[in-house]
Length: 176
Image (cartoon, rainbow, N blue to C red):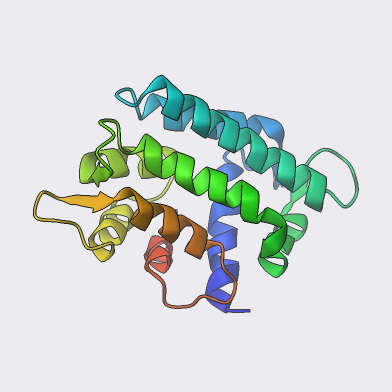
């Protein structure tokens, strides 16, 4: 497993644990979902519903698969197990990645404009500078857009422990 994968997981854990309790709880996922939905007012109701469902499935999968002490919350130690066994999260992660990328395409043309990407990624909590750098790494078109599948694949790649030197590592540029 790559050190970068652990760093990526630490960053995501910190972003979800916005209240700083050291644990992930259902409310953390609700708060994140609400921030992401607020950042996507032009998206379709179907896309908004899909991301809400994806956040719920992400949480449900975590608590069912990783809550070793059955206390209804996930510590970093428990959460880091998702890096060790990513296959346990493939379906939930695929749903999440595809729903988030689709949310970033409010007009349904298969392309995500930088402004929509920036809004969603900063709503999640990533630093604006790092998000901009990541978008550039995805190879935007002359119209400053990336394809929906490029971002969805980038999200899935972010959670892959065997991956190193990936575009998603640019989100680690500075701690968020």
